[in-house]
Image (cartoon, rainbow, N blue to C red; front, side, top):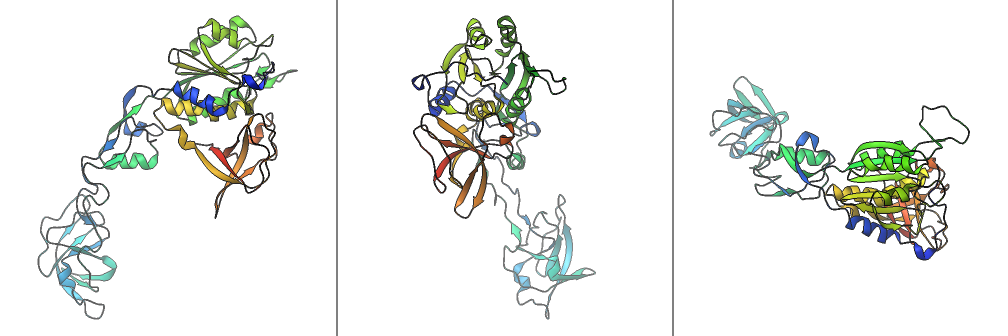
Length: 414
């Protein structure tokens, strides 16, 4: 795909990556709050803290299948001299026993069932021998043995999740456990993705001379969806000013518009002019970043507009570094949690002048994370994104880094 960078920009015209991120995030206020059924909340971000109104577990219950007993009745019990107790009832999950445990008595109990009144311990079924209406207990137990206490996990009033938390499978389970049938979440960002270029061909189209497969129209919407957004519009525009304006106009009704290619000032690059005509205010153009130098960002009202390089690798890298953090902020998340440090497994060549985003594979070792830079770092090598766990962020002023040095990394993936 055609790159944005047809006009060389001086180093003085470029802003640093971190400043670009700050500008983007300053413009990305969390979206409106809505109530979401718990089954639809996966991947969303909480808008408020969630407190439990009830204890978890809700009652004292058995951790094992066995018999609820009074611990005092098992004193001295062993395999050769068991304690013989009368079985007076059963406590099943969802069907508590209707009687209490008295002296010399036991009640059969299932895992998770309510501990009957009078009982203060549970004997596992494998430590017993039941016959008719009696049970032989072959082990001495202490009070509290194999009992889960009410509120042992969560007490009433405990804050179980805080605002901004991303709701994953464990969070869904915890919310269900405290009775949250629905939760307050920020709305999912609605994203439009447009690609530009006469050379672009969809995967099913016949190849023609000079044609280029439009991979951005598939990878970028996929990245948006993976980031928790809804890609509500995916389109393309020919290399014509009026066609470009017509294609962009509906995209500006979304929360975020992502435009791939055509944001330079070459004869056939019309995106910048179309954005100006449509009232989009430019915030920056050009980042001291490799790959991704010819990146554009602006706003119209509450809509964030990103002009990404048309090069597929550059588009994916810039999406990870700028667009995804914006989407997370709009959704009420905390984008800074995507950064950590790792130790380089091999040398990383670099000339000062631009921050480098180096595609790497992560490996967890005894000393922590180790980043393995891929050998092929060309911005035209789309397969170099396969297996990339992170981008090592090598600062503008840095020279080459050597194996064993620590480097900040931006985590990829969900």
